[in-house]
Amino acid sequence: MPTARAVKDGVVLAEANAWETVEGNVYFPPSAIKDKELFSKSDTTTYCPWKGEAEYYSIKIGENKIQDAAWYYAQPYEKAAHIKDHVAFYKGKVDVTIE
Image (cartoon, rainbow, N blue to C red; front, side, top):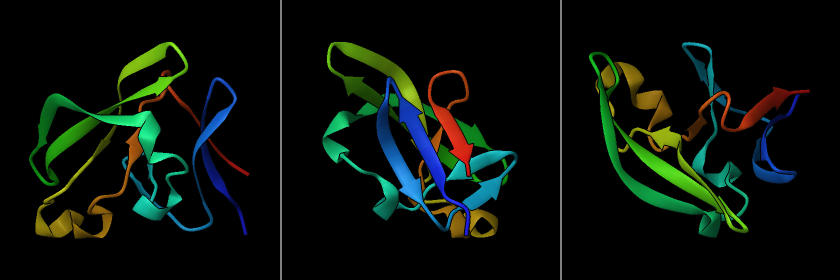
């Protein structure tokens, strides 16, 4: 079975054998997050007409802070209920691979 990983600067942020893929993004279940202390809630939000309001996390690894590197839907609309609280990472900010 393949494994999805989100890695930044050699640090594994999330790893899972089961995940959701929506619009080309891997959504990791909350249990896949390795070190929640690296994540801090951002004030940024965005809106998707079929998923709802996304909330964002910034990630800090050492002295490197990656602003709004990840997002999640705490209260998704019904069509996106399967990704509730799952975390996706911005391409270009965090490397996500499936092996």
